[in-house]
Length: 341
Ligand SMILES: [Zn+2]
Image 1 (spheres, rainbow, N blue to C red):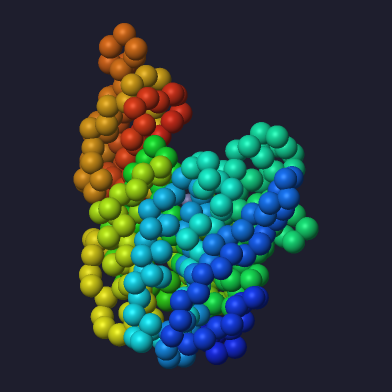
Image 2: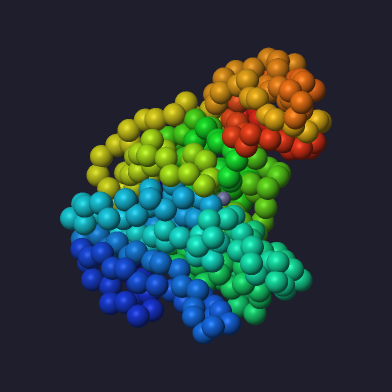
């Protein structure tokens, strides 16, 4: 159990909601207006425990093809025992409704219509957001200023993007965020994952992603990746529900101890093996398999059925991501290998 952060729920206010102890409320937060006059609203579940305690923000589907997290968070928010809960959960099962409704990572229609205005187009890489910005900036701003900022803990649940599958892993804020990062690592261990990514460079620690901005603001923050984009996987959902419950026990918002799951290997990077030829992809590896340097990860055949490439492992280590797309072009990933700390 860790000490509660700033962000206790006694002075929490959510616009338009009367917050009463021991209740579950559902509402929607307006972010921006569409040309037809309808609003992009993010769904919000406010789960207020019977006893005072921390504010914990949890969000999913900031990329619109990432479905597992939606079910994980709605299951936890609907099922948690209000009598046992200390503090308040702010749960946003769909953080990027525009992308979710087309089941794509990005809100493609707006990007195609207005590529200048809508770049950057990813709310995930637009934190803490901009009230005078484009759609991605406005969505990020609404999430950060109104819901993450009052919280002491932040967890952003992802599903690997369509066409790939990760072993369950957590990603931490980078070391530059200070002592809070160790607390994030303890929270990741409590969740229970196969890999904990403790990187100091690369896309998982960009300064514009929500867990990094939150950690810079002194919050204990974490990202999670579970399953495969474009799929709803009951096994991964069960894993995630157990993981989120574990985290709530770890921070003392629920009684009891975390139930261990996953191998918990800390890695500092993930190295990609990429195809140099195009064709049909025949993967030869499975998640968590330990491969040797040079071992064949995948075979690529051309459309006439000839083997045109055997893709070797660039280094030894565990397979952390496999590719489920059946075809590849030159330069596309075929697998990723973890680099243990
Ligand atoms: Zn994502």
